[in-house]
Image (cartoon, rainbow, N blue to C red; front, side, top):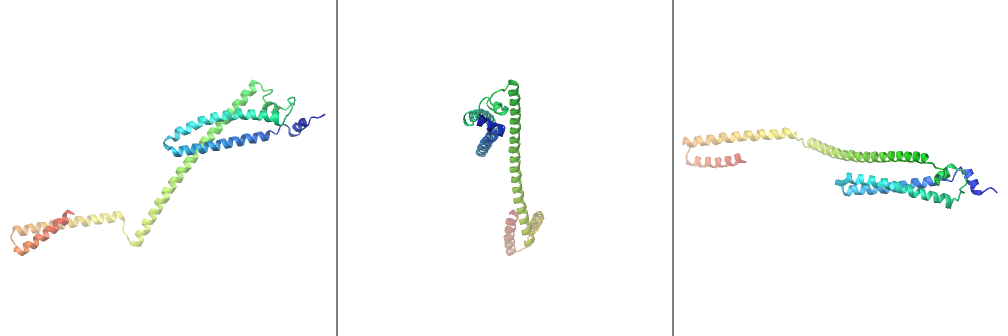
Length: 223
């Protein structure tokens, strides 16, 4: 009598390995999402230690990948032998590989090298994604800063046109020139007053008024 499990394996070609592959992929995605979320949260809380946190997570991630692979190998073997219950005598290469049958040392080394190469590529891709994400955040921050400066410049330009304001540099230069001219005038008036007193060319009332003017001019010259 033809064994129904042999018929199942013959029709499918192997144990529904796609189910195992999907489970493995989803487990990896969940773990990577959790790792990335925790990593970002810790870096946000301790920005001064972001590099240290990143390096520690890389080491932890490699260890976690190894543990996941070992655990999933045991799970896959359990699925083959206990759930699907395929007989051990079935000559199906994928099935035999999955339960560690008929694998020589050379094949195992080749598989390990291939897995290691894939891990290196995966880590490199993740590091690149993180760097690109940070660069994007930096560009977004600069863009917001430029937008703020652009709005401020637009506001000042519109205010200048509406109120007929002069250029700030020209205005300050104009004010400085006026102050210099006022200072020169005050010096000339004070010199004239001193000369008038020395020549006794004024009466007492004029001298009193002159003294009052002198006091005012001296106060202005000090400001």
